[in-house]
View 1 (cartoon, rainbow, N blue to C red):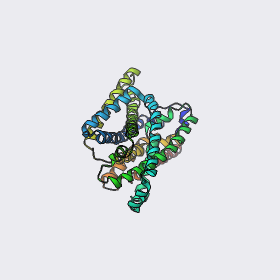
View 2: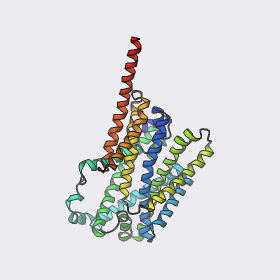
View 3: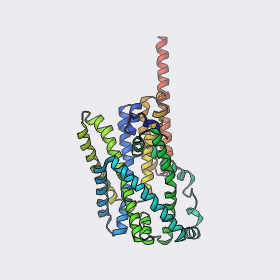
View 4: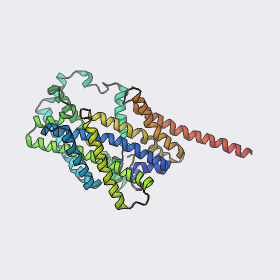
Length: 380
């Protein structure tokens, strides 16, 4: 609903283009760099999720699995592009939804999962929605919402709709589908915590598929999860590469680049992202997947969300000069907050608040100075 009004205009391909139209070229370039950084962080979490499947199923080392998964991701996006990922995504969605619901039904009715979960796991922290603290856990939700609204991949999907009505319906459908899958996966994680407490969190779901399901159905489920994780990583990779070509390369490096040249740069960027991801994943093999996701949302949201909202709804009331400072100040404030040792998730509040103050404060300051100048000019 947030972006659907932009669909009929068809005037932008990237979120930084919205920012550029409102705040200028420098703001567009800065937003592209920061948004790409946030999306890149999330790709690493997706690769770790994929690697867990190979380590559990085939017993391979993290280095070998990372090489395989990154190669699959790069090939997926280079040879398929956006529409390739979209068509596979349609099949993936059906498979993921169907297998998740079946797993949930088996867990509840065949393995008495609810009984085990409620009788073994204590109320705290397992059944408290805010067990990590109200402020911190709300920040997780807020960072996810504003992070999604600040991500090129989701914007690109909405803009691909044939009209705003189709895009709105798609958004509602996706929102409806998210809840059952999330609940089922949470239950499976809690069930595996009881029966396999020593395993790595990333191995919980693939181990459940291997140990508790029919081998054929379990194989289909594992393949579905693999495709889902690679498709998500590929979508983020394509989003970063698209922003680099459209918002940095063409705007700042080679303004006369033709379509063929841009395609080569796009593919080269995708390969470079794959190599960097491989290096990082190998050196962070035991990290939590969700930590990467939440950290990514923070660095996607703080530089982008407030400036984009202002650009779409209050473009004529915000000064261009304020945009670039707001884009930089938000993530910088969040980063300083984290480096000082404060709660990582609460940094989303700091970043968004600073972004708002800078955007509004500089606009008001400009008006104040303009008023003084006009008054002085009239007196003279």
